[in-house]
Length: 302
Length: 220
Image (tube, rainbow over all chains, first blue to last red; front, top):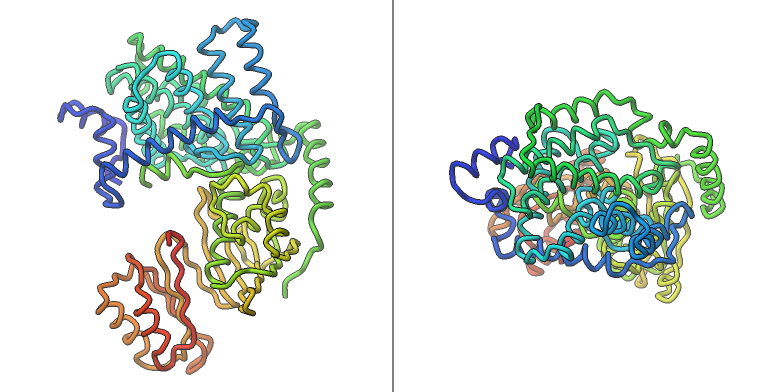
């Protein structure tokens, strides 16, 4: 991979006059795994899969543990009844994030973006934007390239794994990727995309990965909502001309450093944070009892 | 990492390591067996054992054994599918020595009597590692087409295999070689950049001192 920093991406866009998404795609093509046509087709396939996952959300489905399900439908009803104060667009964003998080928890098909646990953030921003502001499908595909390119830098300089860097590395990265993608969709400059990424990530630094019973459910599903809304406010600020006082690559490095400073109990072990709360522990206990009933005997090897 | 490792894979949730990776392990077991699985004993280790049911790891492994892909929405129904397709399976837990936290030990039997034992682990992001095949340590990922060759430990056998691959214009990405004892059973694991023709497989299988050749390509 040749992209080491967002600064590098932005300056390549300035020097060549090419759009940022194209620089990201062309760099990826250098690996020689596929040509431009195949790459675009694959990106379009990811978009179609996101849309179809949203369309096929089942409002009655509940996860195996019983901890997730039905909340996307509740949110949708509230939005459609005009009972929210955030407005239609943000209401749809919240609904989509819940639906996708629940799809994942209930073993439905999703697109990891960048992970399964954070799969709701990007579609929650893109699908309502597509419905409300009618960009072309090509523009959505271009925005997905921007998201993926920023994600590459996040993965390289910091982390996109909760076990390595906490939730800031999963929901935080998804939010930063979505902020850049949305800014691209809205016609923002490469600098604005970089700013949106920085602003989104700054707001979630230190967010811990503390899943109850180690399952990708509590608090993961609802944190997708926060990640999506945070991406939108970051993009709004960047589009308004607000700048990040700390450059984006330094923010990303900081996320990596904070992740390394997090104790293991706050990195997807299910031992700290909400997982260690009295109710979190009780839910885990109930779940493990159910689990041991479902499991057979234990073998000791050799 | 390429772009589609950041966006993607398309998969059935909830976890790329505990669900998507587990389906892949099941698929690898099916391919390595090279027979229709009719009986399987699945033993979960570590985190797979601890949170396997909640993540659908058990159903994902069975789905893979049935030939389902990681994005197949039938994965949650794999136990029922197994019954229909006459795959008799049991699921238990095991404590393996020095194994990755997301590991599984599978013993599987095919319709035509073939047997296979496999230990594999899920590394995250849907990537997996095959740690042991039939009791022999292998340690390979399935990102490339892979040849597993069991042979008698004898001078020149590696040269004969690699010479054949070179004549077929097959580039070797990585190669591991090990043996039990001098002159005993040995194994070569070769990851290659292109697919293998059936005639090359046949030539390999018929070489002196070669006992068994397994070819694994998840994209075929």
